[in-house]
Amino acid sequence: MIVGAFKNAHGGATLHHMHQIVQQPYRDQYWLTIKVSLITAGVGSFLGLCIAYAMIREGTPRFLRTILTTFSGVAANFAGIPLAFAFIATLGTIGIATTFIKDHLGYDLYAHGFTIFGQTGVELTYLYFQIPLMILVIAPAIDGLRAEWREAASNLGATSWQFWRYVGIPVLLPSILGAFILLFGNSFSAYATAYGLAGNSVFLIPITIGFYYSGNVVSDPHFAQALAFGMFVVLAVMMLLYVPLQRRSARWMR
Image (tube, rainbow, N blue to C red; front, side):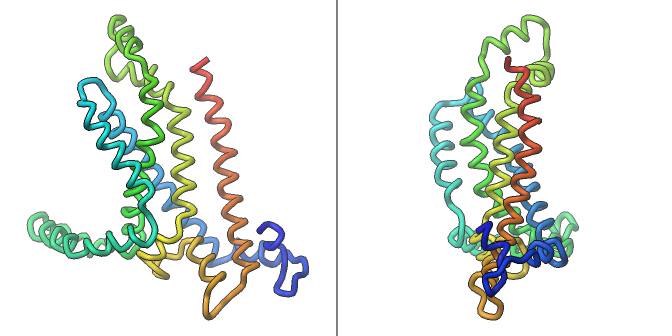
């Protein structure tokens, strides 16, 4: 793929594709893909962390954890065209809900740009598998929080907020950062779900790559490889940002 990204249609070496992917409209498509990935990774990490903690904390029945873990294992792998069709099939319910909100609260979701076939719809659909994936990834880290730490903090007069500020969050931070990067990459590379849901109305980079690989009008595999190479560059930058943050947050564990 890397070699093909630097080849032209005749097989010769070229930098034209590298210059082309940083121009419009592809620059905006990269930014849109990054923005969708950041939003879904951030929201998915936060909600997944909260749900996982509520599932594991003391006092929660064990059978609830079994049910939620089983569902998360299924939902985290339920993506692609079936997931897109499942959300499209709920449009009637969404229409009823938006009408109720408009009539009783005076807020029209559709008038403010909401549509299941747009960027917001894609982000909402991605959360269906992002949140369960976060639950599966972060649950073992939450299990590592020892009850003795909370008891010791309480005996020293620490509040619940102080425990999380100085103990809980520092311990979990490396795992949270790693999970965020995982969710970002999971969303950044998703293709079938967005394609089945929005088609060519939301120009994400994976969809554009698909067009250039199998398009009936335009077919340029080498340019598709260049776009994919650009995706690897974005993920590499994310990893370069993650490594020093992970090292800094892991100092607390020593």
